[in-house]
Length: 184
Image (tube, rainbow, N blue to C red):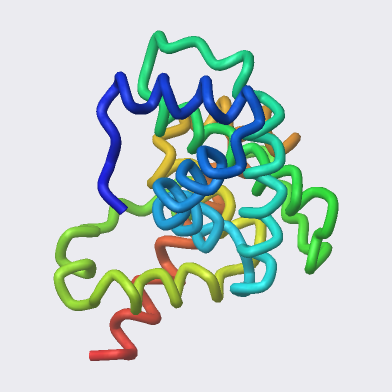
């Protein structure tokens, strides 16, 4: 579905707040694809991504009345969806993998040429590889790479140390690079 202009978005929000099922359906259809992509990045499988998406839309509809049009509506939606995904992962932790490192040592903090590796793989293949990462590493990778969150904020969100966030990011990068190299 085509993206909406600012006036259409504000009208759609008003209609949704008034309880219009048609408007709610339109909002869902308009943003389903981009928000489902967010959920797929965090979820270990499609079913979990669908659960995250459903929970996220429940939160979105409940919070629409409080939306302030000071920034991008889609960014506001994405923030809710990322937070929903993190809540979901905390609530339904699929693997109790928790690695804590007081300091990420210099051997782990490698500098990768990401562009070279990414040129060799399609976006669908990359998303499938990201989903295979351990939960915490996948979550840190997504927050840092796709959601542009700094390590200090990631550490706070996930209740881990900042060095642990660095470690998980670099572990994820190394695993992705290794998997990409195997596909060549």
